Length: 84
Image (cartoon, rainbow, N blue to C red; front, side, top):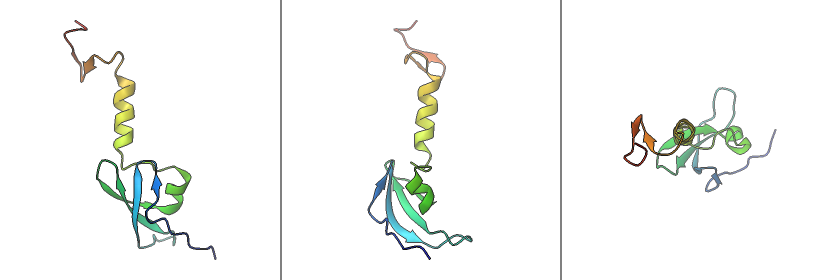
């Protein structure tokens, strides 16, 4: 049996681990985490430690918005005065 590692108070990416919650059906420990955007999620400890989960989903949204904006003057299809 593996040794229990307490993740409480540690920060992984944008997530800060608050407390341990019940195990999943595969007996993997899950943790309640607070994201920097103030949302709370429950995530598997091994996924957090590996870096597979870095935020509540807000990071993915920011990356998509950044990649879809070509020049920085267009927000949701509307061009700025400077660009026009």
